[in-house]
Length: 332
Image 1: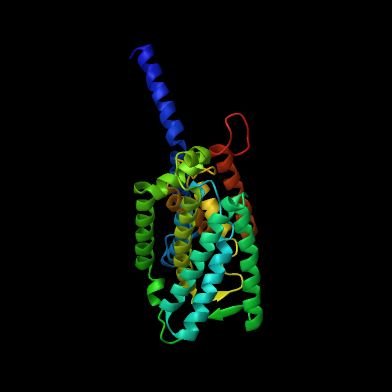
Image 2: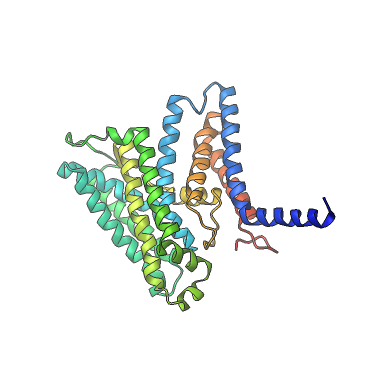
């Protein structure tokens, strides 16, 4: 092989790694976690793939992935929604309360969908209409929903409520095959809209360059709102499984879920600035990696407090590797 051919091959490899580096890193991280926890938990005598632990892992993965898949649209815009956790908490609470009052889970789901869509429309349009960062509106919603949750549980005089109506059977929502089926359907639907329709194309274009997209005649407000509506539907679905798996809700339900989604997407290779490199697969890969860490670390004897530090350290490392500026350390 000549020197010129070798140089071309080297340049080709460098270009490929530059284009697909985040994907390789995210998949490599997932494979490492699978191998590591398979060996480490086996040594401890309590395999992460045992029936009980696998059930916990699937439940954790499904709820996180359902949220993360819906959030892909938001992150492709270059935005993030920090009200996700409080929305999950409110919808789970309403599913229990309305389900107990009416004896119909369908009515509860429809009510939550209506509220979620309204929140999504306001959340998605406020930033553009008020000329402020979109994350600020989500912070406002986070505080408002937190206050509503506090009022509800204060009036109930308890911090925990259970779904007790005999007409509602939640057995199906605890079945692993059904969880996986719903996640597969949601991923397929979101993937279709994200890759094969103008909704996904314009969302990625706005994340890449909003000014150029606006000057191309795209209705920025409309195509900022639609991703939040997609997220709203996915959050209600996640709330249904969160509540359905436990059959209860509390004033702490959903706490920290917004960070779980953020960490999962970053671990999956999602660029913080959004744009054309955003992928739905980031949500699935990242959710699997994050859930393996959440379930696996306590099994091998890592104290709960340290698990948060370890996950935070991994998150920072991934951000610095995949999202830093060319000549600096701050995210792009």
